[in-house]
Amino acid sequence: MGAAIRPARTIAELGLADIYATSRQSLPGGTDIAAVRAAAFNHFALAGLPHSRVEAWKYTDLRRLMRDAKPLAAPPDIKAKARVHDAGALFATLGFRRLVIVNGAFAADLSDLAGLETGLTIRSMAEALALDEPLLSQGLGPMVPADEPALALNTALAGDGVVITVLPGATIERPIHLVFVNTGAAAAAMVTRSLVVVGGGARATFVETHEGPDHQDYQVNTVLQLVVGDAAEVDHFKITREGGAAVHVATLLANIGARAKFNELGFTAGGAVVRNQLFVLIAGKGTEANLRGLSLLAGRQHADTTLAVDHAAAGSQSRETFKAVVDDEARSVFQGKISVRPQAQQTDAKMTTRVLLLSDNAEADGKPELEIFADDVQCGHGATTGTLDDQLKFYLMARGIPEKEAEALLIQAFAGEVVETIGHEGIRDALMDATLGWLGQRG
Image (cartoon, rainbow, N blue to C red; front, top):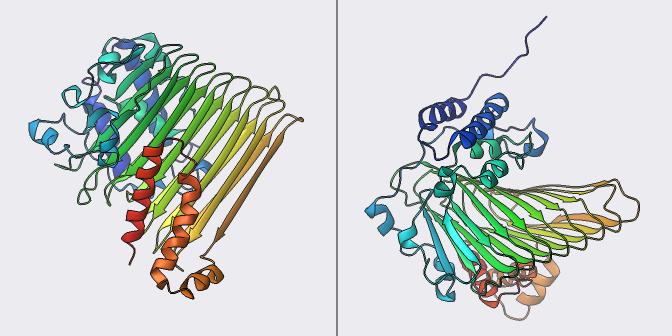
């Protein structure tokens, strides 16, 4: 009987095994959490880093792209905290409630925790894990897909993050801004886990920003678990503006109840390798979900958006719209899958991905999918990839607009179709300014 052949472990995989072995005793959590961590790391050890032969990762070979494993970031000291004064500056003037996570650790002294609205509670994930609460030990395990090694690695190594609870019926008028920042003092890995639970009938807006220095090749593995109750309304925005050498892997696990309204938008304009994966379960009837994304890529950036929307209840609606602008030798990846279970009759779901290539060396890969097990549905998907319209460009130039400016106007219009869907005026304007800033850096 022949033994199964396993590929040799890479330097990064060996390093991750060493990191887990040396840090597991110091990671927060009691016996239940420790058991969940051990099971998750065993799964990762068997699977290894995802590679191109894993279907969900066929365009993003993390085994090749991640050359080594950085040590877990040390808790921030006074100098590190002093460097984060301007973090999240994109939304600094909007009066959001700032929750600051520095080098993977929640910094309560830098966060705005005063005068919390009625029905809102905020605490660190490390504190919650130390109590070994059933909500966390159960949530860390079952929501992890069995075939998702990056998520399992996060479960094994996550040390901190935030836990936010919004009680049923509460309205949180002030958006909550989660500021994730790497100070760049040393090459390190930040593994964070956050949990947001929004009760039935509640309303809230959450913004995540991720950033760090260009000169440091740090690594990020971050997960947000989001539970949205029946008839709740939640907006979530994730802005990735990591340093130019960073590897950033992010996972959203969203469980949406009945008659809820959920709006999700991702904006990516930084990082060397970025993977945003979203697993959205529409678990209740009559829910509306709008999932959108915009990637602005240049140089040799690689950005992957992988989306799985699972319609598990009848009468729900989802719209998925993702765009990318790709310049130089950058690469954009979009994988989207809509699944409709047999009981999810009268589902209405449409997925669209569009890519604008600005260079002959730019690359785009797209793979939209439908998996339908119900017969009374309206589902569809579409994907387009192209270049700037020469006729429209000529039209603008014929009216005295310089070539680069004409191109910028056309790119702005393309990207604006995503940004302009944002209901919050301040967030919409800030992301449009970020888009214009990216356009201004083009050669």
